Image (cartoon, rainbow, N blue to C red):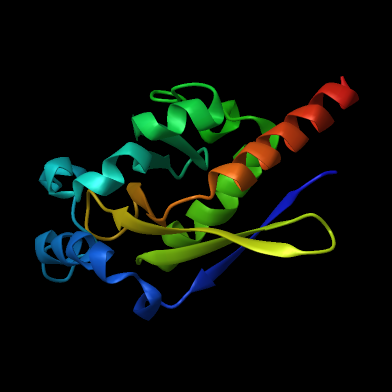
Length: 175
């Protein structure tokens, strides 16, 4: 059975209460008139500890339209079978590379925080999987230069294991 991931943007009003301090902190350090704070102004220690293991910080390169992992939460290493610090979305296993572009690009395009909801589907049923809050960073106050992401509804391990297993089986079958 091959599982697929479906994503949709949700209203920020659906952010869980325990993630609001993160969003409030991000807003508090954004300079007036800027779309977002700069990375050098952001203090990762202000991210609630419960979110650090699944947090990600990426730098965005608009000329090449790629994302480079600056910070990779330790809780993600086992899930993705590697630490991707210093790597790009293109270094992720194939289905995850596509999904990453699909869920980070809206933050760059809209220049604002986005709450992304993920569902897993086996073709017959769809299961709610996780929600991630992605907030932009801007070195010049005008354009997005990076994104910080936290998982605000933790992934469901069983579904994630099934997804990774099905995608890796499909990749091996194709080779």
